[in-house]
Image 1 (cartoon, rainbow, N blue to C red):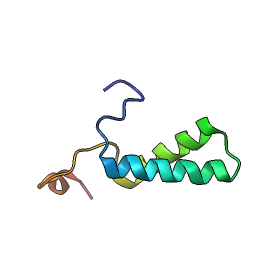
Image 2: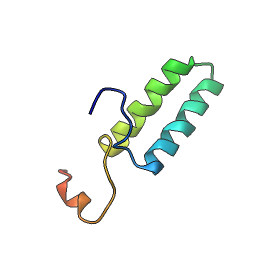
Image 3: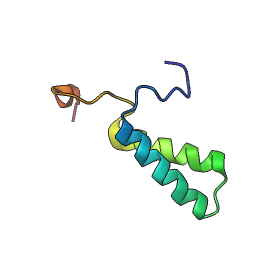
Image 4: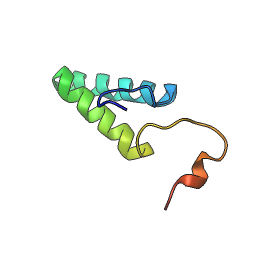
Amino acid sequence: MPRGDKSAYTDKQKRQAEHIEESYEKRGASEDKAQEIAWSTVNKQDGGGKKSGSGRAADKKH
């Protein structure tokens, strides 16, 4: 997947990133910095882009 390609992310992850980005922009962050923070946060929470579905959680290591 090329860098910056968000196709592997679920709709929920995309909505979360958008909401986080808007929040940081309201706090005065630049659009680029807000987007960077938003996607970093989504990646930290969910371990990167992934497809939803049955059995996906079994692949996750604790």
